[in-house]
Image (cartoon, rainbow, N blue to C red):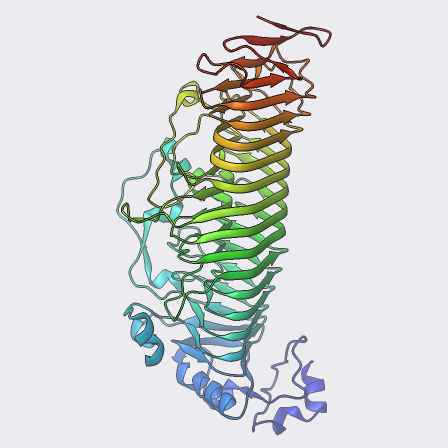
Length: 575
């Protein structure tokens, strides 16, 4: 509704004693016809960048909620503010051309005592805060700016070596002098809507709904420096029934990170969460589930989105893991669906990780991770291996990858082929924390029930490592695999202690040496059938410790310590 319509309907002066400011049109998309709105200028807000307007805006919010609810309207201008608390039935509408600018003075940030008593954290400061509120919103085409330049500074550290950048972040060279984080904190609220706004220059996390029910975040834009520490984009924590769509996020830390902790009350399962139609860029992770997850995650979908590194192609500016599903804190993950994702310039396309509790080596393992389906994903210019890993005795379960294309862009080293990957049962869960993997496409260890179909992995440079490494995997189905074989002529697929595996309908690329190598006395019930391996010099190689009868090739039992070679016309002979 524009200003002419607003005046025509008699709203400019008739609702709540509010009048429209001359020249301040109301953006279409918000219906003011049947609800009062209050212009913060009528409460003394000046929007001149110099005057602190916190009290004036808060007065407009308080009067609106006391009157039963409505819209607090912020017209164009730059409003210097500390903490604004949103209350029941209030939508804070920030017009195009209007900016709420965070104060550089820490004393301007506070929390209501009832909330502060719950979290017992003296450093909890927020620019926008809501607590146990119902029917609240942040909307408009304006901006909320945390003024991070006032609170972060470069560290006096030596410049990292180029060969170390692949596992570092650009934020590692900066520190926060003070914490105003999350910039927008919506705690224990019901029926929350955040729409249309730009959030920028957050000092820490940008937007966190925590312990909330029924949350819609739509069409927002987040812009934080790629060097800003802990500057996550959206972090729904211990929330249920959350919809995030049509968002454009470019930040220094995780773009979207779903968590299950809740210092404001009892932890709730992070459940029924959808993320779709988003563009995510970060110097950390793109879409992440599970960090800070002491409780469960169920029914989560991520679809129709782009993950990219826009800030630069220097390795420490790249997205670390584009899709990052991790459980390091004692909770569980069940029922995750990821589909139709395009990835470019991320270091790691995919990381799935189950481990024991972070920082507590004596803790009893209580976590599980299962029922994960990922399909129709394309990733270009990857430089680190994708991985699916549990820990001994606690496998990741029931994982399906379908229609996945990965192009890697870093030349592999011959020495990496023999790297022993540490278990790292404890510690921070990050895809780059294991060092270099002995395979360039996928590394899968401690997994039960793993299905890979229509997987294409291509090295655009030279890589001597196997394409895929499977170790301690039970129940493997691998079909329609294609891509570039290792430049060394060694095996394309390595199976170590793999049980109950069906490898079928695969295609060996030109230059394939050995297609599959099987190792380990624990390997058993491995069957290869209906594969097109006419380009392979050798179909299967068996390690000396593989027991007789463990491997079947096209229905015939193989003999341990023997190689099976494809003859020119599809016959085969043992050697």
